[in-house]
Length: 270
Image (cartoon, rainbow, N blue to C red; front, side, top):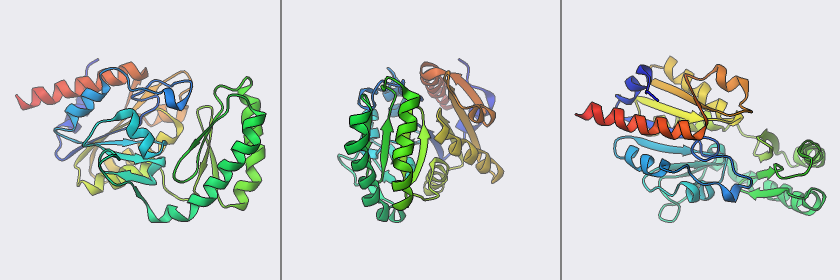
């Protein structure tokens, strides 16, 4: 895979940022969240990248969970779609929960308790993933995923409204979220401004990554060098492809592109 001229021009910027989702981008989609692992070589390329760029991981997972998978120091870990931040591995750095999210921590836990008490017995294979604010219900392993989805939404709709929480959907998952205008796009903008970046590349694969791609377009309009990459799978939402600057076929191709970025940087230094 050859790195495009557009990406090369972004890679030449300093300060530079490289920002990635995890699941479906650097890690193949796994049957359960705990089984996810980075694609071979990805961690080493991220370490290399951190030597010349500010590298961020922006994920829907909790920061601690995302950092467990990536496990590379000197990266910025952003979790729960932007509600949690950690300037390094949580084992050595403090996790910051943005102030606006604090009031929604308890309501989110109440909905997850409800899911565990009422939905888990009804839906064999349902996995409840808790986060500091809200969480995710994974129904990928349910015998009838579409029926599982309908049952989850019907059960949680009224309680979520009563507790002022928001329900959203990902790949075979229902997310319980705080009703805040915080998303991966806003997290990306904060990352760019925090480090005073002149160039940034963002890569993602899921519907929630659309916010990041849209923010890449806004950053370009504001004069930044910016490039958005979509990792395409069989179920990639069309909207992501419409807003992609580059499209790669699967996680293996994304990691290959990351390697090519490292090669391009090396050639630039020579």
